[in-house]
Image (cartoon, rainbow, N blue to C red; front, side, top):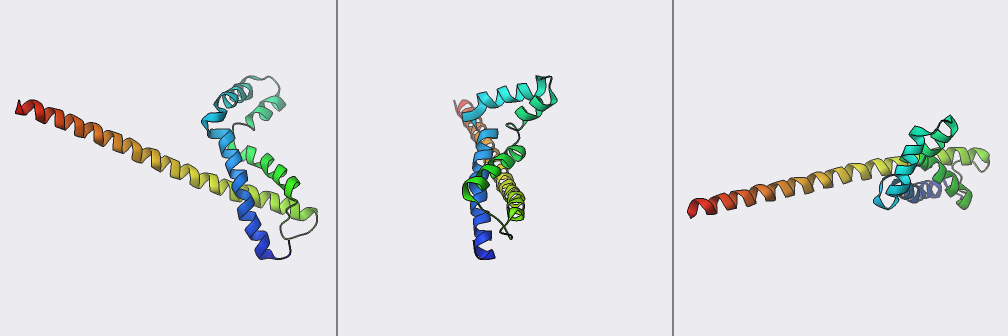
Length: 138
């Protein structure tokens, strides 16, 4: 990675799969059963180490650190420095950008769910008004 411009492009691009994997594992229905198991283990295990280990799979922020480490190993991406410091800086920067992506996605999902709920409520009220109008006319 020669230029800072390319390093920054890689930063924003590599953060996307990190955010995607971390969000999917910690929020989506496809991983619901394992996540519930991990949640129970994080609350009920006697060992502090085991409680923290299982908690990692229920927290997108925590989990994104481990996904970032895997991405750094796979890609060899470094930020600003070409030695071990580049890995450290890249790791924290990737986690930060990935968590911004996940926060934005969370806000968008909440807004979409709110709009859907409002539409359902509006349709329900409209149907009730139609049925009460029809009964008055009869």
